[in-house]
Length: 373
Image (cartoon, rainbow, N blue to C red):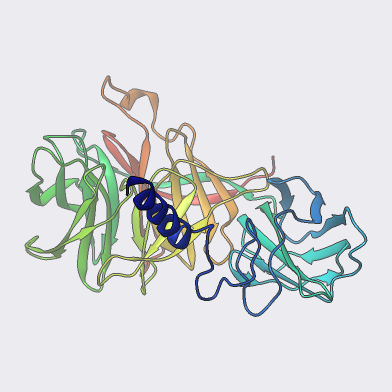
């Protein structure tokens, strides 16, 4: 009786085991083969082709016509059709598989492009070859110095993280735990006209005015606030998964930084990510993007822990200019708590550019001046 029971168990195991029977839709497929896709023949366990040039992660300049070599290790012959995508979007190319494909990158933004080249052969077999390409900027940024137009008092206790100008006043977000504030400031005198203290466990960061409301980020808490511009009354909260650094508005969306080389384009209603822009100059990616201002269609960004502001073309992510503000704050204003350059504000009506820094005693109105270095 025991032997008979064991036999029944063995038969049951054979019937339900994945390798012991064929489920609907898998009939006729050999063990180890992938399921058929889109009516094409099964994908082979081993690819016959591979990309031999360029190496994965190779760096090119935007605009180059990149040669991609696909080699085969059998006599499968020419592919009947070839498709290429870059970051999930169709990419135009010339050439064939096996052989050389030429990809013109003139219409691409800078940054990392994840390519997928898919070849379909006469027997219906489909093979996909992935390749990661990095595109740097194809232009050398214009270099600017500065001319000081005016210098104004600035609260030495203000650890400036966000700055903007609107209708004759500066609005400022200051940082540090236990000291973070939102402020309205008279620029000519540095007088703080209105101030709101953040909770002691919040570190104030970027600030922007969008649709008549103030948006303020915090550093590591993944939360920000929407305020009534006049009363500083909290209208709502925003949430985001990254750190919060700089913030500005292009009039349609908000643009955020997190200290990396990314600009995050955020739709304002729910603060969800609508797009992500990688920022590169002619040498490679530009990290540590911090406080932001949107000026004449370009994004101006402080580069953290430097005396530079970079000018970014948002359509492509290319750095088109670099402002060197070395020596802006005269030595006589230095003090033990002085920190780095940070804070950009723009008066659009009068075409005035303001900059300051963390715990700086001065706010500067400057004009950028072309340099020939």
